[in-house]
Structures are given as structure tokens and as C-alpha cells.
Figure 1: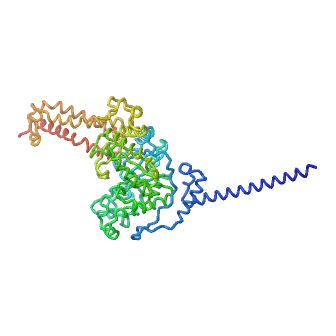
Figure 2: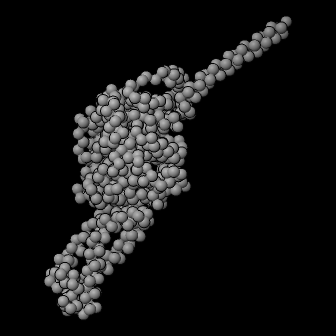
Figure 3: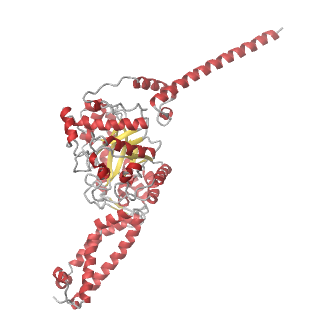
Amino acid sequence: MRKPAVLRLVVLSVVVLTAVRFLLRSNVGMVLSIIERGHREIGGGAVLNEKQTPQKKEALVWARQQTSQSQEPQKSQGGEAQDSPKKPKVTPRQDTNQTPLRVVHFDLKGAAPKLTYLEQVFPLLSSLGANGILLEYEDMFPYEGDLQILRSPHAYSVEDIQKIRHLAELSKLEIIPLVQVFGHLEFALKHEKFSNLREVPGFPNSLNPHAPGSQPLVQAMLSQVLDRHPGLRWLHIGADEVFGLGQGLDSKNWLNSNNGDMGRMFLNHVREIVHFATERHPGLRLLMWDDMMRHISVDTLKASSLTSFVSPMIWDYGADLQINQIEKFISNYQAAGFEGVWFASAFKGASGVAQDWTPLTQHMKNHLSWLKVMAVMPKYPSIHFQGIALTGWQRYERYDHFTVLCELFPVGIPSLAVCLQSLAHGGFNEEAKKQVLHMLGCKNINLEKSLCCSEGGGAFPGYEVYQMVLHIRENLKSQIHQQFDNQHLKGWFSRYHRKYKFGNPRNMEFFKDKMSKLLEEWEDYLQNFRTQMEAIYFADTVEEWMEENVNEHMDKLRELAADFEQVIKSRGGQK
């Protein structure tokens, strides 16, 4: 009698389960459809990247919002047709709650290190507290095709770029390439092939934003760099110090037709680049130096449509920042609608023309000042601090392609260690100092004298070069000067004697031994120095550094010895 009831219950259960499965499958399909549609419309896999996006439920809402925004008609900015290019493609918002990056800058326009050195340095950077590197390639990138002319004879190869990416990944360092797109384009505009793209015909500094070939040039450069760095989150487009902008005939004509609005002219060029980069790589965020934007009005910045895709990098390398001035910049960028802001300090290369030694105290103070700026960021809740770049300029005075070398990277490592650990510990306290000494393998550090490991024992990459540069700068010039100040030499082998190649060999014997010994010791030392330098740098860097810091003094000593030998061989000459 219970069999029919049981059978009915079983049949009812099967029907219910089938209905539930059907409903669940339909809902899941609908949800996935919504996600995939939003994913397609905002451009790629960044929506569902757990490192960059909120939870899936929030992603559904966000996708709908972005889809509706992307379908809104673009508002005209007024002016000529070129003022209204396509807006940058909609990209996912970055997770503003992520830990700010600490990025070490490699300025490769001078003294670019060999890969064998980077292999040693990257792990040190990571241990010191860095989590990214800013690679300003310039002519060290392996440009191809029509851009091959831009390459240095010692440029990295395609395989080298792959190796750099791998080495960075091993040390958990995020790579951010820096490609100049407006100012500081000397390395490209110096070539006759691109000289017609100069803003000022006589100067190779800056690009003419109105020349038909300008956008194709920078877009081709960006394309090749981006293609060699798949999966980038950040790209730095430079755009600082566009010297001469507005002085070219094309720019003057544009300004005359547009109320002299230099800021809008600048932003038009940048906007085209941002549109190109975000179309090519949806989800990519762009960085740019902020100095050209500091005097552009909030309304003009807001109208540029760049604020959701670009983060300004505010830079100041002084020991004592004007905090109020920096806050004014931050406030303006927040009002304009920028979602994030970066800072840029300096650990070397920003303390003087032809600087060969890094002043530790100056750079430490620069970072302590930036810590004060970071502390006031809660006052600006709508703009988030996303990272700091510790710049290490390799060519000083406007930091351009043609200026002289400044401190070598090994010479700047103690400063970099002090600066990174100051950021990590909120100041250069005892714990920070302890960590610096430990990681550099040093027994002591003297900030006031800008000396590290003066008692020996250094174990950081390039330590030998660090010590040898110190010896050269402290002793080479002074010892040779003392030689020429010798009373015997001044009395018996003066400039006049040397000009006419005569002298008394008996009297010349008084300074012969000292002169010969000094020359021999320095020749041996500099040969060893060359060997250490060549392990880190390419031949052109070694030659340039020696010419700027050594040859002027050594040539005087070598010429003195040659004149001495000539007079001795002639048995005193005839004067």
C-alpha cells in the first residue's frame, strides 16, 4: 500500500531537481554572459584579474557602468578638428588600495650596464625594498625597421630585453618602460632622417606636435617597446621639459588661432598618444612627468579626458622640498579628476654638473621630505598615492642626451640603499642604518662625508669600482699637481724648457725617480680600473668616463715623462 506513495515521491523529487538544475544553469549562463559582454566592451582580461579588480559581484555592476559610459557620445572640446580626437579607450580602474610601488630608475642614455651587472643588481634592489624598475631605454632599445637608426652601437638585443624581463621577474621587480614622446627626444631628432620633426629647427630637443610625421614616429617607438613587454600595467611617456614648445612656425600659427592656449596644445599631442596606447593595450595605465601640467588650469586638465588614464609624476630632487607647493600640485590634480599620483625623488645624478661622487646627505634629505608629503596624502581622499620613482640620472643638466656623465651606478648604490631604507622605515633610523650596512656588506657609513665602507669589506655589486673611483677622485689630480709643483721641476724643467726641449740632465735627475714611480703606479692602477669598468660597462662608457675624469691629468704626466726622455736622449738639447 505504501509503494505508490513512495513512487510518487521519487518522481516528484526528480522533477524538482531537474527544475532547479535548469534554473541554476540559466542563471549562471546569464551571469557569465554579462561578465563576458562587459569584459569585451572594456577591452580584455583585466576585468577578471584578481590582482587588479574587485570581487565578481562588484565586477558585474562595474562592467555595466563602464559599458554605459563607453556608449555615451563624446563631447566636443571646441577649437579645430585636431582638438577632438577619439577619447582614450575605456580601461579598468586600478586597485587604488594596492601598496604603492617603489621603483628604481635606470637612465640608459648614458653608462648603460651590461646584463651581467643587472643580474647582480636586481636582487639587491629587491632586498633593499624596491618592487619595480623604471627603464628609460633611449637609444639602448633594439629598435627595428625604419627606427633602427635610433639604436646605439651597444644597444641591447631583443634577447637581452627578454633576459632583463626574466631577471626582473625573478627578483619580483615590476618593469615600467619609459619612452619619451615630446621633449627630450635628442636621441631621435639628432638624426637627419627625423630633423624635420623638430619644433625649433636648430635644436633637437623637442618634437613639433603639428608635423605630419611626429605622431607616426612616437607611435612606432611605443609599439616596438610595448610589443617587447607583454603584460605591462604601467608605461611612462615622459612628456617633461618640452623646451621650445610654441616657438616653431606651426605652433605659432596654431596658437594664433586658439587664443594662445599653450596648455591645450600640449595636451592635444599627449591625448593622441594616450588614445593610441590604450587602444593597443586596453587596461594599460600611463605615467608622465608633471612639470608641463603644473601651470595648466584645472578646467583644461579636466577637459582633456586624460585624467582616468594618466597619473602625473610630481618630481623634485631638492634636499628640502617646498611641501606647500607640492600640496598645491596634488590639490589641483585631484580637482582635475586624476585618480592617482606618483612622486619622483633622486638617489643620484641630480646634485651638480659633471658630478662624480654622490652626496649621501642631500639625497637622504630629499627622501625624508617626500615622506612628509606622503604623510599629508589623507588630506586628498580622491587622489591616491600610487608609487615613487627613485631617479638615478646618468647625464645631468637638463638630463638630456648630449650632457656629460655623472655618478656611475655603483657609486650611487650606497645612496640608493640609504634612500630605499629610509622610505621603508619612515626615516634613516638605527634599524634602517643596520639594514643598509648588512645588505651592502659594510662596517660603517658616514653621511656627512658621503662615504660608505671606508674601513673596507663592501660586498655590493660594483664595490671595486666604487672604491677605485674614490681613490681616483681623491688622489689622481692632487698627486700630479704636487709633481708639477716640485721645486726642482719648476726650476730646471719648466714649461719654457719643455717647449724648446732643453735642460741639464744632471739637475733633471732630482725629480726623475719620483716622476717615473708616480707614472708607473697610476698606469698600473688605471689598467686594473679599466678591467673592473669593462666588467660592468660597454667600451664607449669606459672611454667617456676616462676622458672626463682621468685623461686630462694623466696626459699631463705622460707628456712630462715623454719630454724628459727626449731631452735626456739629446743629452740636454741646444738652447
